[in-house]
Length: 156
Image (cartoon, rainbow, N blue to C red):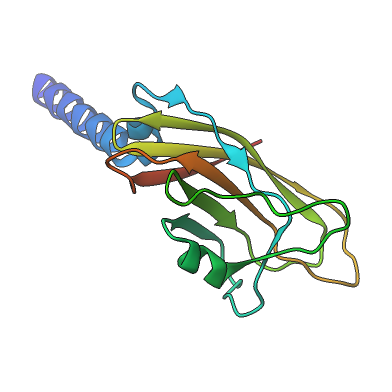
């Protein structure tokens, strides 16, 4: 009786551990991942016709789709980052509108076969009287099989 219970518990542990490993997209994407160069996009803003009630993880393959979400910000001494749409595509994380000054900083981008992992960091300030839509967007070189699955990973 004891050996049957031991065998059943071992089988359950093996099944559970296989299920957990297969269901974690970050673990799967990290296998063989290598860092890839990226360009952090600067001097853009999230358009006010965008739904900012929940976090959004976005991939943009075309200028038209990108411009439906983002607009160029007119800042003295700084032009928006150029994107070469023939050679690059954009991934972005857009967080919900907030009244706390929040910065989203791209940390690194890794690539494994069929996957891109976008690591970013969020820093939140104290409440203010105005709101903002925090986001981070990066341009990455196109390859023949893009778009791919993108896994977004927030770092502490």
